Length: 434
Figure 1: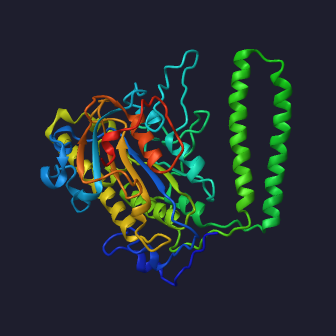
Figure 2 (figure 1 turned 30 degrees about the vertical axis):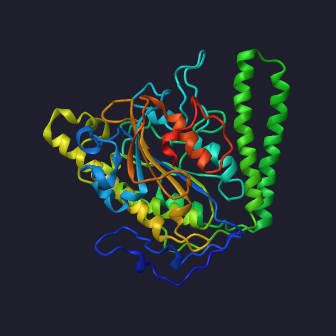
Figure 3 (figure 1 turned 90 degrees about the vertical axis):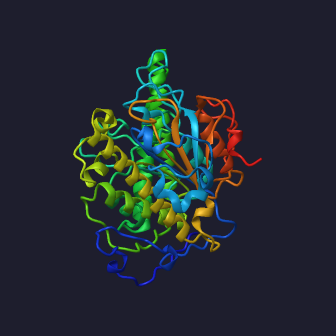
């Protein structure tokens, strides 16, 4: 069981001077996890929309960053240049819609290409990882999304969606607000454990009745209706598994919160920083080992003072002010990513080593620039992949190397038993040390 030791530190001590952002510069100062055995590997999938500015973000040469330098867009990552890899020539072969590419970003599915189905997705790689890495944690994975001002219509993700999809290809709702993530990680139900168990038992009983009625109905349905009912039962089974997990953890208290609950209306940069800080606490206390986070785009632009929506900004070729705003967006995204890596390096794992050393962190987008579906950017960091060396821009020899090959490589590096994933044709051997 994870134990969290909380020190009497006030909320004021967490406030960054001159801003309303919460900083967690030394997580070990108020949270020390004590879990027997070697610290586990964690996987973090960060995804944004609409890519980056073509002429100022992407390097023109392959090689070590120490030799080729960093572009204007990558410059905020300078202090981490030995710990990042940018992979070029990856294409999500399943993506056909530049406005909703994140639907298949972690799945690789051609969501509109299944005969007889208007939309059909498959399991995302984070959920495949969660089956094994998250088996012994309170949350098999944390699925995070973002509250966007227009509901997500202009974010490049599809309205209201996370990056994660379950075994049946159904969208997994993401936690959108820092306050909701705070409550998920720290809030303890006021009911006593016996009442919680009874409530869970009642829900289980209702599901049993529905299952029996459905089995009886299934024998009288045609093939298409049986398929729909099978999909329903798949979702039902996911609910049952969730109830079983809740029952196992009902008697285990959640860790005490190291700071007060955040305000309800946090968005943009403030929300990203706080969500990422709480991701680190969740990993450090072993509440979860797999995280996906669909990063906000429109609300980030708003917090930067940019009036354009993300979709409009992706057409940055129309004017110099749009080009400048796009470059500023790239810089801000990489500043936030660099800050997240800072926190991972400062936080201590169970054995006293940096949490960074046990994490595989992928940052990418569903598009390259504008509306280009090919050659997606894939930024990789963390010390959790033992055979991957960092500090370079890696240009793969084969154009349109399946993005699924990249995910398969990371899954295997995390210790997940998988011989293939989605449309993969193998791993990416160039990523691994020779």
